[in-house]
Length: 160
Image (cartoon, rainbow, N blue to C red):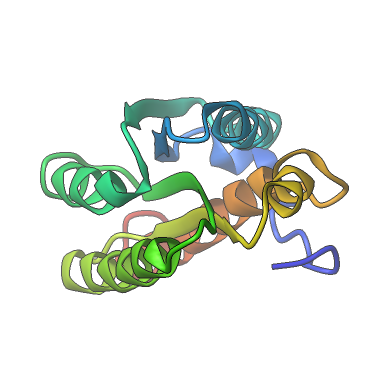
């Protein structure tokens, strides 16, 4: 996603029945909070009224929470948020790649849209730019969740 990502949510009134789950890691809490706030604000602006938020310790715990929620609820989409910043080891790459694979697997096996809202950067400055900068990643994640939830609902006959 980028600044040129088109907004396909022109009919915000039709978003009021969507149920969106937000799962956000607490690690890198200031940046994660900003990302969560941006995402929540965007969902509210786009008239999503059924939002449930949960926190987990870190980004490594996101796949379990997403899996649990996808099995035991009826959300239209799940947005997983986290901030993963490179350190002195390759641990950040392992977490980022394993999360992406897990989210794709859960989404396709359980037929629920999952938005991978993890910010993965090489430095804290890059993370700040992506969480607090000109590009509003939280808004992009919210828009993507709405668009793909509507696609799912349309093709599964949930709504016409």
